[in-house]
Structures are given as structure tokens and as C-alpha cells.
Length: 481
Ligand code: AMP
Image (cartoon, rainbow, N blue to C red; front, side, top):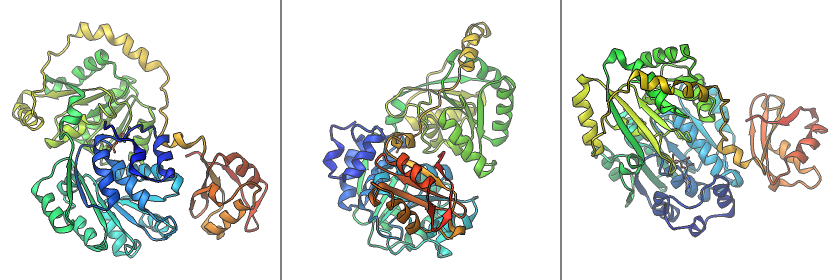
């Protein structure tokens, strides 16, 4: 952590208040180095790991720079995966919450029409995966004339996933007069080329590459025969007794099979892989994040960028196919200054591959003897005891805002011809409430959501229960999410 203070960035009170609510005390190293440059309008290339606080590096300047009255998008963020798009849009919403910044995520495998409707409302920031974003641009659903910030997040991953053409197409559609920020764990030549082509005098910022995550993680490796892996997994789990753990497999078939075997033993687990329906994937991630399950069994779709608090253990049941993914996987633990443990299974035949990983991370992963059955049996009771305790549901970042912001659900939306002005008008008619107390408004087909700020949620809720909007009777409740 740096010795700077967020106040030194000279950013607005609304953003400082949100940062404070999120519990950020001081800027992280990458934030201290990069935010002042981005606020000045410099293009920046940031080489840093996830977990270093890099989302706020772009979220803070673009929320600060956004003109809230502008109806067209002012910032476009590209991310490699759908989960990351959603997470980043939530992070931006949180940082911009008091400024009433609306950020939405667009990604594949979700009905395009639904996203189109969202894009028709006032949106300040769009976060999307390259393919779907380009699709919306081509269909004219996203207007880019007012975009003044372009962010390429996890650029190396976007390129290695084969998105280069779409990324370039999107970059070419964005006005040239903009700030471009690129974030990447590695800067291979292909990324240098993009920077040279599309950025203006970019400043390069590099914060402790690789070491940042690896240092805080206790790593260990077991040589395991393929058909003994599950029995070794059981032993390790009894002994380690993790609070929260991701088990990484190479294929979705393995994820399915390990999940079944774990469930058969009543382990509290949920799975995620690319073969699942989008909504199921998001739901699984959300529930794991909340702490409903102790174990997440996953392919590498979960390895990148995803931020789950307090993961104590990572188990590489299979070695990753791509060397770089080793770092991304183990980087899910040891986040935000906490310690973590990464346990890797490697078969005798994979020695060469393991060596390549060790070379990549610049250290030898300590090897250990597989524990004996007796040793693990001794720990079994404690494992199941922890298992039987009710999970502590982790607070979401949104809940930090609940003391002064209440989200309301209104049972009428576009189909009943409700518009933003109707909601604002009705709420402003309530005694002691004015426009400043109204936050983000989201009007869907059949319902609407509105944030009520400054601790006036209850007051507005009670008043709306007795009123109509546009002469229509409505049902108003505190929204569940
Ligand atoms: P990121 O690298 O953006 O995925 O951030 C990793 C985690 O660190 C997230 O949970 C952030 O909310 C958190 N975080 C970001 N900046 C700070 C900060 N200055 N102080 C404490 N936590 C932070």
C-alpha cells in the first residue's frame, strides 16, 4: 500500500464517500501510481495483476470525469469474460453510486433484445465482452460519439482468447479524442503493437509483476497418479479444512464428475464451467461469492479476474493447460493483503509442464509427501464439524451502501408507459424529499427500480405505498437485490 490518501487525488466528495463505504482506506500501489495520470487525461498502460486494485484505477477517473446529465455513453470498458464484465460494471456502479453513474454489462448468451432495451436508457458506462459489444455497435444500439474513456481490461487474455479483431474493430469505432487505458498481466508484442497503434504517448506503469500475488501464497505440490487424485483430494481437504476453496479442473467433464463425487460425500459445493447456461454460471458465482458454499469446482473460466473475498485455498486438481493460468488461478486466493494456500496435483507425466510453470513464476513449487490415511482420518471429524456449521453469508459490497441508500421496487415499467420523469415527479412531491435524494433509476418492461439516497428510503417507501404514478396504482417494496 502507498502512503497517499484518496483525498490527494482531488476527486469529488461523492466518489470519496463511495470509496470510504467500500472500506478502501488508502490507495493501493497501482492506484497511487496510475490514478493521477488517468485523471490528467494521460493514456496509460498498466501491467499489474488482478487483486492489485486495478478496477478502481479506471473506475475512479471515469466516474469522476463522467457528465451525469449526458444521455449517451461516455466510457466503454472491454473485458474478456462475461463474469468479469458483470463484476466490473458492479464495481463501477458502486464507486459512482453517489454520483448516480449508471453502468451496464453487455455479454453474449443473454438475449440481445433485453440488453438493447437497457442501452436505450441513459447509460454512462458500458462494460462488455468484445463480440457482443461489437454486435451492439453494428446494430446501432450503442452510440459512441460521446465516449471519452476506452478501457481494455485483461488485454492479454482478450487477445489469447482470439478477440483481437473484434477488439480492434471496437477501438476503431470509438472517437479518437479520448483517454485509453490498457490493463494486462503480461505485455507481449501483440499488445505493444495495439498500444503503438491506438494510444497517444502512453505512460507505462508496472507494479511488482507476478510477485504481488505469489508472495502471499503458500504453494505446495503433490505428485499424484491420475486415478488416485480424488482420494488424495479428500485427504488434503480433511487436513487443510478450508473455509472457502476453489478446485480447478482442466475440463468441464472433470468438473462435473468431481462435483458429483464431492456432493455424494455431502461436501458443500457448487460448480462452474463454460458448458453451463449463462444464468446458471452467474448464479453459481453469486452464491459462491456470498459464502453459501465452501467449495467451487471450476474450469479456467473462473480463474481470471474474478474477485471473491476470503478464499483460503486453491486446489489445482489438474494442471492448467496454459502456463499463465497457474498465476491467475492461485491469484484467486491471497487477495487484499490476506494469506492463501495453493495446492497443486501433478502426475509423473506432467513433470515437464510443471517445470515450465516453475520457470514462469520464477520459483520452485515446494513438493510434499501425500499424507497418510491415518493422518487424514484424524482430521475428518473437524472437517465435518466445520461443514455442519451454518455458513456465514458474506456481505456484498452493495450492502455497504445500504445504511443510506435504499433500492425500491415499483411494480410498473415501460409497458405501463412509466418514464424517468414520472418517477422523479412523484417522489419529489413527497414532503422533505427532493431530486438530490433520488439515485439511479432503472425502468424495465414490467417493473422499475429506484435508489433513494440520504437515508430517506423508508420515508419514500411509506409515501409511495399510498400514492399513484401517472394515475396508476402501483405496488412498492424494498428491492431484494
Ligand atoms: P481488483 O484488482 O480491482 O480486482 O481488486 C481486488 C480487490 O481489492 C477488490 O475486492 C477491491 O474491492 C479491493 N480494493 C481495491 N482497491 C482497494 C484499496 N485501495 N484498499 C482496499 N481494497 C481495495
